[in-house]
Image (cartoon, rainbow, N blue to C red; front, top):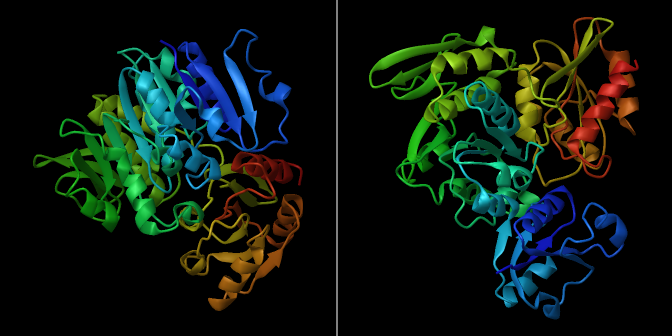
Length: 448
């Protein structure tokens, strides 16, 4: 018997979820609180025979007649007014990844953490594709899990990048292998406290059993402690400490220590990725692939061939002896710290954007003489400038748009310098997403 399912949010995730629900034979009620949206545009991607209706504006109790489930888009917080209407009506709320998991088959690796998710997910996907015939790379990386779930079979391997927003509303979501790469302050405008943010990230393991495993960053004290109490097996990686069991560094080599044996995997100079944080991402991907039975020689070849993900410390161009890097995905201070550390020489930094209630002290302190100038954009520019001044960094300039920021950097950069876009902030307000911000930066650089 078909169900009537409410899909909250008409963006990319909501549309993908709606299409999947219709394919399973159920009926969709698509809801968006923005009553200025146009009905014909929202429904233009669906067929006339599709069982889909639309509600815009306020969601009322009577709208929930015959609704059995709500699938909520990750961009919508659980404090949205309509959520209380759902709770009063005892309507279960699922995330889009929960809906996809409910219908998917085969093996699942799910990756979360504050930073490094996209690179680790993309790399893990490439390793899987080098060994398995039927691989899907989904989630926050750009392809909704619901777009691919119905294509999976028992022989499929799915690699999913999972955000804290998506984990808030899982029920029986259970990866065979999970990974939590790190946890640093982010999205506190949504999660309110670090304790809540940590709890949501760790919930990726909540349905895992002793037969499953979770890959954890040993250098993160929160995760190291969590590994001692969780149900799945803990497999650690570390870029700073030698481990008796797990993946770690030995000089320039990534190695695995297991059952008293030392296995040399790859020299970091064979990689196309810059920075210690990327060595951690590589270790996590190797650990995930190994747990999914990919031979180590296949893993090593794929790791050495992998190129940096777009918008994540991505080399753009060299102009007049100055190298430009796009790290638009550096949307929080910790990610921006890693990008600055990865720059090999004197750096001019473009930063600023939407305020997620982040603190910038540790980021400013990480400049450590490497950052020569900072060009600030967006809502947070005064807040960042004040923080920088407090730490004695005063080489700060403002720009009204990306074109002006790039031109200022070009005029102040000397041959051998690096220009880095790593905003430490979300893109909203000036750009619709971090991808658009990165593309505009690259256009501005190429037109110099």
